[in-house]
Length: 75
Image 1 (cartoon, one colour):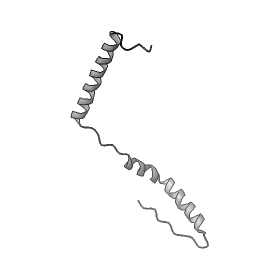
Image 2 (cartoon, helix red, strand yellow; image 1 turned 135 degrees about the horizontal axis):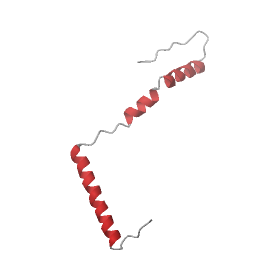
Image 3 (cartoon, helix red, strand yellow; image 1 turned 180 degrees about the vertical axis):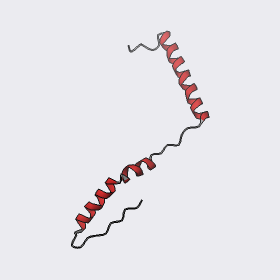
Image 4 (cartoon, helix red, strand yellow; image 1 turned 90 degrees about the vertical axis):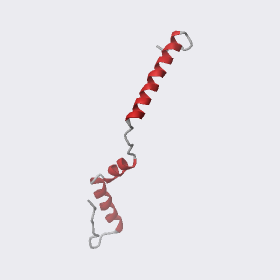
């Protein structure tokens, strides 16, 4: 929905711009544009599975190193 404003008689440019900016903020246009700019495409099933397996392997490796004393417990 485009914003259509006309400058009133004897209205300064500054007041007109302020009125325009208020209208833009009221319609939440900046938030909509930011949400479009930072859209991340959902990851595929294969990529999610690969990340989960890597996480599991890393956790197993960490537990093993902790068990043999290479990593000190922080708790």
